[in-house]
Image (tube, rainbow, N blue to C red; front, side, top):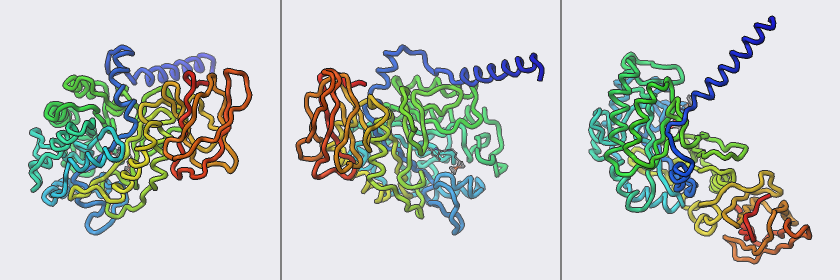
Length: 442
Ligand code: H79
């Protein structure tokens, strides 16, 4: 390649880089203060409940007697189920055990501050009484109730924020809706995506943001085939809910927060982000999935995430009767129990002032307090890096013992600390609250 060729290639790469950076455009014009005010409740909350509930809970992972190897809510695509057959499922969907108040109480008991529920997943089935299209839980099932209405009322009563997940691009039961992972498999799915957005997604999102009271979060999913023009059909609808925040999956536009799925980022970051995660291996209910994570694992995930500045959106997948599987209920109650005594170290905190931990655990901070979460104690002691302030007191949050600590001699303003193991460490994490004269920073 000659010099001109190299220069042109370099320019092409630069243009590409600029274009991709440019393509994440801020969806809203707002000052830093406005943004901080809008995000305040969410940054304080840390822990939310994701609910994946849909008509896929009827087949629950099995089609014509065979396991469909996929997550429960993707059964239609991975089973290549024809639209006409899938559209018969609602006849069998009668979740008579559904009790919105019970779900919201469980979320609250778990220490969760908000709920995000699937109002329509990629299968196109609306879990609310949509006037846009009869393929919804009110019109197409014997249930004849609107669970989102009931959930909104229960959330309002209990002071839990409510958000809606809505699959805006993928829709396998409406002509023109997108399909990832191989595309359409049934002629009935062919159509014009712009028309689908105009006739289905736009009016349904309008219904969701109009008829259910205050909605705190819009959780878009999978921006397949989205572009600016398509995103612009949906984005203005958010004006119906002042203060609403949205995730980064609308397409074209940036969101208010990032959405690592099934993973916890390695590094911390100044951006707002939320890890969404399943408790077993599926989002939507699957009768055969018993691969449950342990309470200790889930709890330590929450600690890990909060110590890096993120939120944890932990999923439950209710069955076709409207019941949250009991292994999920058990774990949520155990997490809530732990948070009752240790929650001070979680809610409203910010990420740790140091990234390299000198012990097996994590840290968070709030004002002049530093919280240490010790996962596993070494037989001797743990040590803290120097912090530019002096320690005033130390106490355990969840265990009834005095903290046995020594300050190492250092320069006056750079106290370092040695803590001996307690006689009864908490198997999830022993939490130590350290109060300093000033904000503990390195
Ligand atoms: O709603 C949950 C997923 O169904 C949804 N996002 C979460 C919150 C999601 N949609 N698309 N994706 C996630 C990314 C695509 C993943 C895929 Fe697959 C890998 C599609 C096919 C292979 C995961 C595994 C989904 C089906 C099988």
